[in-house]
Each structure stands twice: as C-alpha cells, then as structure tokens.
Length: 400
Image (tube, rainbow, N blue to C red; front, side):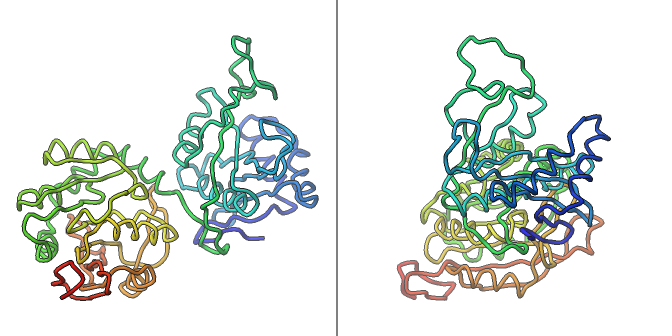
C-alpha cells in the first residue's frame, strides 16, 4: 500500500526485502540489530497489530516508522490509543524532511482509529533532534513521569541515562484531516525550513536586504487607506516593514524565525511577533496583509487553512499580497520546502479556498543579483465582504 507519494519520496507498507535492507544499513553504523525484529513487523501487520511505513527516496529504502495499534506496554497499555514506534531515517538523507513525512503518515493513520496518539523518546542528548521535532509537532508529556526499563521510575530511584530511560509524549489528532494517499498527506516540513533559516539567518539577511521590489510595494499601498494597519507576514530582513513604516502605516511584523524578528525590530522599531503562520489569531484587524516569498514554504495541504487565517485577520475589503516561485508541485531544496504555483494553479487555490477576489495576478523576475532567470508569481486580492462584493474600492461596510 502506498501512503504517500510526491516526487522523489514514496512512503509505502513494508515489503519482503525491506528487513534485510534495514538490517544491512544498521550494521554499517556499527549497530547490532536482529533481523528477526524487523521480519516480525510484517507478521504483526498481518495480525492487525502494527502498521509499518517504509520511506523510499529515489527508489531506495531510507527510513521507517511503525504504528502499534494496541500497545501492550507503556502508560496506555491495553487501551485503544496507537503508539508510534521506531521512527528512523538513514544518515545520508537527513534534513530532507523525510522524518516529518513519516510522522505525517503515522499520525494520519492513527487519527483513523483514535483521537490521541503517543510515543516514547529517550531522555539523553542523543535524542535531542527527536525531542525538538516532537515538541514542534505538538507532542506534550503525558504526565506519567519518566520510565526506565519498562516501568515508571520512582522519585529518587537510581537509573542509568541510557536508551531505556524514556519520556512518553502524547498528541491530540482528533482534528487531523484524513486525505487520500498520493501527495496529500499533511506536512510539517515548515518546521525544518524554519530551522534552515535560523541556521542561515545572517547570510539570508545580507542577500535580501537590498532587494528592490518597490513597484510591488507601491501597488500594494494603492489599496491601503490612510493610517492603515499592515501585517508583514514572514518579515525576513524587514524590508517591507521598513518601507511601509516609512510610508506612515502601522506595521506588525510576524515571522517564525526569532533571528528575523529580532533583526526587524532593531531595524524598523515596529512591533514583532515570533509565531508560525498556523498560529495567526487575528480577527478583522488589518487593512492589508503582505506575504512576500513566505507562504511558499507552507505545504499545499496546509495552505487553505493558512489563507483562511489571513482572511480572518483582514478587515472586509482589505488587500492581500503573496508571491510564490513559478512552477508546479512541491519540492525540497537545500533543506527548505517549497510549494510552487503557476498563475492558473494559484488562482484555483484561491478560488477553492474562498473569501478572496483576485484583482491582479502575474509574473515577475527575481531582482537579486545573478538570479534573473528565476520567475515569481505575484497575486493581489481583496477580502470579499459579507455580500461578496468584488470591488477594490469597497467601503468595508458591505456596500460599494
């Protein structure tokens, strides 16, 4: 069974030759696994006890994750809450978002069976990357305390900080939408992209700080009333925030990267919030939302939900601008996730999401040095009013 397929990555159920590949790979790491352990996965799947998800990158097995449907150990043993077990991505394909995709699939399958999923993570520093991933994905400690060698560790009890010292985490998946398999599993590669920007913030700021897109700023400002309140969504180096603030507008800069927020605050002096796009929580507060080269890092499955949050944040008749790299599909490049659009596919997305009337849609060239061959799709649209007026001069009370 194929659970996910998009470009180079496929996530499918386990096949007969997979245990040997997993065993051989782990042996090269100096580990000493038992091949029978992985061969039992297939038997347990036939018995309805476990689902096994195999990640295949460019035709080669590169990772796995399993979902135990009725756990017999741990804090929720004997219940109907599935447990995610044995998440692993081979070393040579780290930082490509494969681990998050495996978790996407596991959580989606868990949501078909229960409103909660749980997992265990080691406490020592070797599990640091996994601990960060789980926290970003919304997992929280389940309250049962620390476990050691299969049992709750009593207060002041001796232990060794090895792989048997565990903390159980849980996540509510009741609102997770279950979608068809091919290319539609929800993605959290946005978290990996944020990590990339945190690691490369200084170089990114230096490369983009002088980018001149003033013609787009001016086109956006034509739709703004006097003393408008503007949301710079994905502020980056703060270029747009500075331009709009200098034009006399009240600006709030938002970015998921703390380094960009700090830089923009120091550069512009405007208020900033360090939040993810899916944490946007405003109601009819802004006359304009500017999202230049930021939403392109959100997966296509998640974009409709983000667009609805943007619509809620806008006042009726407010202007919204966004830009995406020209292309089709989703991809990962140098550790960052991209959702590419053509003019047609972007219009289809906005029409399907609802709440916006497109006023302008077209392509521009990249203005950064040496990148003139890269094309961008730019869209301007207004938030439709209660009576679905489509005038860009709407007086915001629902009448033209």
